[in-house]
Length: 381
Image 1 (cartoon, rainbow, N blue to C red):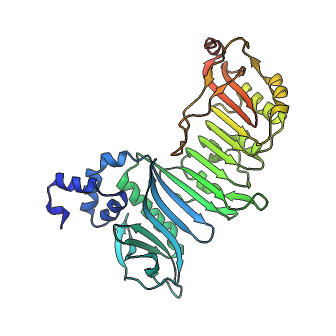
Image 2: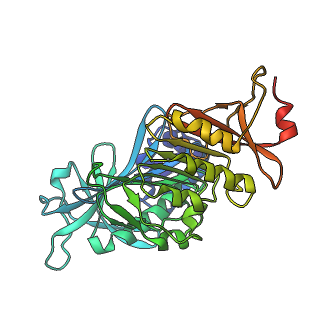
Image 3: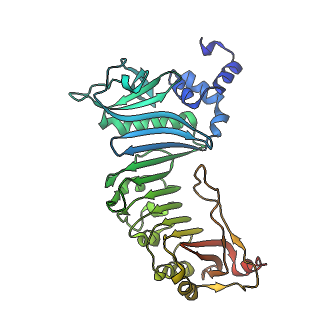
């Protein structure tokens, strides 16, 4: 059955019923087929909010590309580092974003055959899930970045740029590089080490200096080698950091909108310094929301901090509640920041705008209002 023999409306109806992974595979058949899929599925592709690249460097290089939905995950492609794999079908070449890449069809992972590069049988294999079998794109390790870039450019051309492209990496490496992928909106980096063995992570400054400012960064790491104060890393709109040493230096240079810091040790002087710098108007001009969780009670330092920097709403009245849309929303997470309802607030000297402050058990929250003190107090009930 040739799809091209049917009228356009029939073609579209057939394509409408196909899964994303099979549309991706079918688009590789020809330029005309790719054009048909792009045209007929344009509205459908615009409903995709994210396309995610998830990489693991624990035992070997593995990569999956998928579309996350609330009730499922649609895998598009897999890549894994393979050595001495059993014999499979011979390769055929396809043009992917101007680069010829070797593909092969297989019935299972066990029937894959790597292409031989010199005397080595080591290669990287990309698997595209089809209906009854998989299609693999293979590459030698030293060509991995080029193949990944070509496939990403192809995916971006096929699905469009209306969605966000995210990079997530699990690693036990000390030095780490992030691929230069176009339209990357954010990245997540998670170290495998336990709390005792975590080492200082070194991220390549080149990635941040040569890329647009990221929308978000999420890290679960031991510590992070400090960047220069003018690094684009600090310009990221939203940062979410778990268990990081030297976090005060990170916050000191932060120029983004939202910051979430977890499992970090603080003293009352740290919060006082942070609030005073915000009040002066010399730092954190774009900051909307700051959250910190120490996993230890802040009760002992609450009075000291608030007495040093805060003003208070009359306790006989009800303060307004601060909440904002999150810059980065995970699929199953709430879309807004946790609410702040507090009698304590501070006023910025440069424009008179207000921020609410709340200490609550192990959490510190700081929410900036787009209102002057007079406008803010007018909201008090």
